[in-house]
Length: 627
Image 1 (spheres, rainbow, N blue to C red):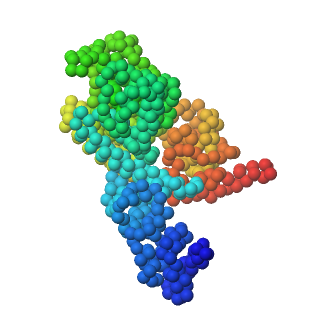
Image 2 (image 1 turned 90 degrees about the horizontal axis):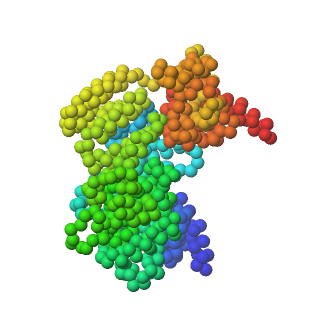
């Protein structure tokens, strides 16, 4: 009977939602149902927010059921934006109708801003002040971020340009939040020893689009601690570490009991879970991200040491970090408490080398050189993070010229957040911005950023006058060139000087010599690069030399290249090109080619028709042959 009543009422609800003044019989049928049944119907998911609004205006009983803080509007909010529910406590009073309105408004604002970015920044990378309108938005930032995530999660191969800019905006917002958290963390007193927390901030900053949290990483480490406790119980069932509760910071002082803990850690980490130092791919940034160390079960000395240190301290062993040259270590005190100690009163643990315990002499043998006693000393959290970021900085400098230098930019941001007056790094940052700013498509704002950095360097170290003066001069020259730039250059295929151009933007091509797959996003009737580039790339050895069309292509390996027409051919098996900048130029992948977005189409207005003809001739003919 109850089921029949619910079914009957469900048929009435849509009618009520459609009619401003429902018939008395239908309304009576609905409002005479028990309150739980009515609430169940209204929360069933078949009604939209607009439906609920109309239904609640029909009578007092339905209006009371649809009160703003009640279950009906909470369910509307939950169904529409499920990922946001984790931000609310079950005990909090929430005006769900108001929250729905605010979130809806934030979503509309987010989409409006994302839609504007392509037109504003197509010809340049998003400048440092390009996010100012986002920073001034009203309402909770989590609502705005949630809408950006919704855009990124849109299904299919469409809305590529929206996804491209939504990703950039989300990247910026999260990095700003993480950097603020890191700066607050660095203000803690020197005896604040949450090494893991600091390492997670670095991980989050370099991977802002990943779902990384200290809570989740700590939970994974806690599960390892449980396995260690299980092993420890087999060694010593009365071991005091087994009585520790989660979050306790107790330490055990007996060396023998500490040794039992370390034996259990070594067995679980290296024998049972198969953690190991990554000797095969040592210079990989993933080795420094704690969430990746736990997933891949490998890392380099500093990341493996932080994992080992965290586990040991949770079980009462007071290990300490040692900023040893070329190989980060931990030290384990063997001397009596309160005694005067030197470097020989410690055993040094190599977490990268399966927890091997080393003497001072063995530590020197490990790196192949003698070092002073000072280098065996313990370091604080800030020094540990400095070394981690320094490693990332070194890796960032190794990035190829075609890359975005994102790792270098991120690591510089982190290092300067810790040490804002490092002149050499400020100079490197200025050079990096200058490098990014000298290209025509880059940001004018980056030029101004360079000048700000250079002025700061000059104040800190007047001895850098020569380098600063050189960059200032060329930066100002760039400003003058930007002032002289004219509007958008439009390239018409029908123009006489473009008669030799065979291919069009959006086509999937293959390089005849190197075999890579790529998509064309621009072309020139002849090579437009300078004499030095032409000489270095040996363009003169080509049959047609530089007097032939050249194409800007996005390559599947993430690089951007400038390819001669004679080196390209149609890809008979077209596939998506996984390049980070695809969305900057294209709005959709059709399965055979990319469709340019509005900004790219303005620059090549006749190419799309040519693409359709090419696709029809090549891929349709191939399909007929197969059939």
